[in-house]
Image (cartoon, rainbow, N blue to C red; front, top):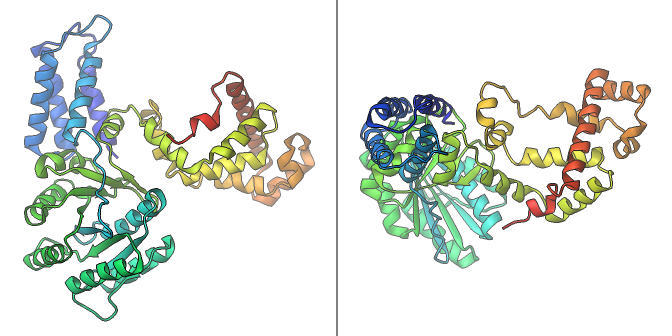
Length: 441
């Protein structure tokens, strides 16, 4: 996500390196390159021009301190303007009403149905809601079945309307059913089309008028670039939706939709989705996204993901074991499994400041931990809790049992010892207080 744009912006800032101060002459070439980078990322032309004009106005009005390089000042200004361009602040979803009704709209293939499940899962697990999913796409039988499967997966009931084939009636009855059965949240999936057409627009308008939703979200495939922005404008002109959801940000997307959509429709991006897993949905934070675009990482989001997966009591228990030098392979594999729950490994690493460039061309397989897990699972309980007893015979047996080589087993044992030593050093210095680091805010 945004890799090409990040590289282009980085090259643009290098044009100012070695310069003593920002002038109209030396900034012109830099901003010309920035504008090209934005256009290559499929950002709307008018928005790209307005963006660079804003940056120029801010840059020319700045007195560059002796301690700050012009290129660093430019990065700061661009970061601020990127944040403003994408909305400035995170805007939360409206959950007022009992039941609260959320209407989901978008084109076919944008990921609407999957998003409905992700949103229900997020609001159920993190906001304590009791959701009811509504299968309002009666034209595509697979959509109803897909929503049922998703509902079973996340433990959320799905209202289908049985033999009813009228989306407006289904939506109205679903809201009534939710009220009667104690559900405080209704998420309505609606039909999409391959392109915007009058029939679809009339139908979604009728549904909105019938149920009077507290929140209407437009789901858009980020991989469609400017087409996504144009479609969003057409929908907004008719629906006046409340926010945008960008899906498939883990795909080969240039980022133009994320950077343009707020400026075109003047509606905030509220969620971003990446991957098919039900927990692969995050609130959109413009400032954090600007950090990632400029290669600064996103340590706040990384810590939040860690807080969601790591239990405070477990972290405290682990810290005590590290302090007593009792960290073993049972703890090691437990930590690996918690990391895997946090999401795509490469995405997680890119959130660490300075790491995005270092890992850009690395092929980091999400299955990279499988070999390690196989080796540890092939150990006896005594070997897991007391790695010091490992001898040549045990290592050979573990290698045979895990389908690996003795060399791979030796490599893991060496990595384990180094990890154990490093964690103990951090704890002694006071930087390894895992319980404090992972304590929810």
